[in-house]
Structure formats: structure tokens, C-alpha cells
Length: 377
Ligand SMILES: [Zn+2]
Image 1: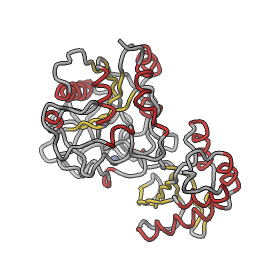
Image 2 (image 1 turned 60 degrees about the vertical axis):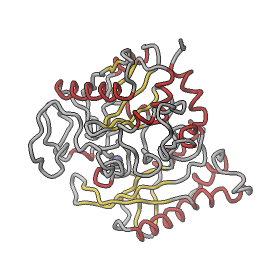
Image 3 (image 1 turned 30 degrees about the vertical axis):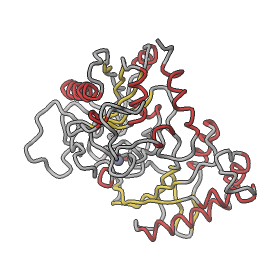
Image 4 (image 1 turned 90 degrees about the vertical axis):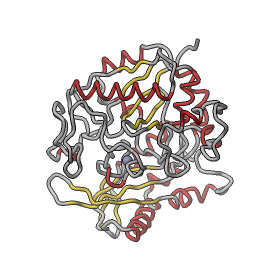
């Protein structure tokens, strides 16, 4: 039928060089006419028919919120190298599924519950395809971030179903919410750059604006940055910025900051500042260098020195730079409050019900405030 996923997926994702967030696929966003509802049973190619789509939760806005800092490497990190190799060797269309709120678990009951719920979700989306198979990976023994995703591999999708998952991105009902990532296709580059600690600016909109101004001022005089932008600027819109002398100023004008108080192991809550900058390049190797360049700097400002630090990782959507409490997905009506579970949940869950380290057994990575281990990927 088809050679491999990658050849197949490249076609649809060629536009992946697109700047900035949001668009998992440039085809998808042009026509997502959820409303007005198209006549039933005449689905647009690459989308679920409306009578099936209506069985899933829809995004609050026009599109799903951007997931920041997610890479295939990061998604696959908890899976043992042997199983990663095995997944690679499998033929046919392949997709990765990341279940909202599901952490890396060694509990057999929880794995079965997650897998079953995922199978049911896929059966709802693609009734009639009995070839769909969900593959479970074994997990590495070493520590992973407590909120790290625990990915499943999906096999047996038709080409059309593959296109649909790529366009839909998220399928969710009240029992399970799942993010779908094409296997072996690089994920869209976003403007998330780095998270800093050490700036004496408590979280507020005003202070975030101040932080952004301070950081832009610092970066505009950092020669590493100005040299880098002089060399790598394929993602700067030339029609907006025709003069190369303005590349640095324009790039830094896109810098924005979000912040929150985060509890660290040995201190009280400290402000963490998440820095977003339009990446001057989307060329993969150069983009990687851009990010590591920013991670190697000490951001010397009039409000203290910002040191790159581990970003928050959201358990709900597995994005960096926000917490579960401020997750846009968690706020969607009907979004599941727990992952599929193999154990009966207590009738009235305590505050923060899930994953505050108390949870269903068998997961040694959880809990005890170890979330700030700086070694996490
Ligand atoms: Zn989130």
C-alpha cells in the first residue's frame, strides 16, 4: 500500500516549516468548519464526518491550544530503547497517542485501562476498522519527570485515517482525552524559548511586560544573539522586515513573558519566567542551536539575573511553561478530570485528586516533591 509513514506524512506536513505555533498542519486550519455544520455524511477529506465528530469534545476557541516544548524525542523518552527500536521496525502507518493526565506507570491495571480506553476512542472515531492496534511500550527504570507523557503507538490506520488524526490533533470524550502525534515527523516549532528563575518580579501582567522589556534589552546587547540572528534569519518575514539591520530589533520585539510561582524543593515558591521569542530560523540544526544558545546565557537585568531552569510541565496536556491549574485544556467543559484508571477512584477525591504523589501504586517516579530534579529532559 504505502512504503512507510514518513513518506506518507511528509506530504501532508511539508508546510511544517511554517513559523509559529498552532498549525499542526497548514491544510487543517483553513477549513475546519465545525460551524456551520456541514451536511452529515459528506465529510471533507481529512476530517471526521460531522456525525462522528459530534461525539467528541470540541475546542473552546477556533483551535486547540498550542503545546509548547514537546518533541518526539521527549515523548518517547520514557520508552525503553529496545521498544523504541521495535516501534521503528514496524511497518505501515504509525501514530503516537499521548493521553491527557496519564503519567508513566508500571501498574498493569492502569496500562490496561489506558489502552482499552484508547482502543474505544479510536473505535468511535473509525468504526469498522478492525485492523487498528494499540502497542504498549515498556518504560525505562531511571527517573522521568513525574508529569512526563506515557505514549502509546497506534498501528493499522488507513491513509485517510492517518490524515484525519493529523488534522484533528486531539480526540476527547468524557472518559479519555488523547493528543495524536505523527510518528517520525518533526513537530511544529513554537516560539517557546527558555524558562528562567532569579528575576525579582512577582507574577503579574505588568511585571511580565517589565520582564520582557528587561530581557529584550539584555539580549539586544548579547553578541551571541546578534551574531546568530545575522547568520540565521530564514524565519524572519522579509516583507515586514526588509532591512537586515532591523532583524535583531524585530525578533526581540516578539519577546513575551509569562510567569508563575513554582515550588522548588528547598525553597518556598519562586517566580519562574517563561520566555517566548519568534524563532529567527526553522532550519532544524540552527533552531536547536538557537535554543541551546538561550539556555547557555545568564540574563543580566535590572531586576536580577535570570538563570535558565527546568520549565513547568503540565500534566494535562504535557506542554511546558504552564501548570495543570492554568491549563487551557483542563478548562474545556467535559475534559476528563482523571486519566483512565485501573483502580476504583475514591468517591470524593482530595484536593488535586490525581497525581500529587499519592496515587495509584506502582509508580516509583511520582511524588515527594521530587518534581524539580534538574536532570529531567
Ligand atoms: Zn496544559
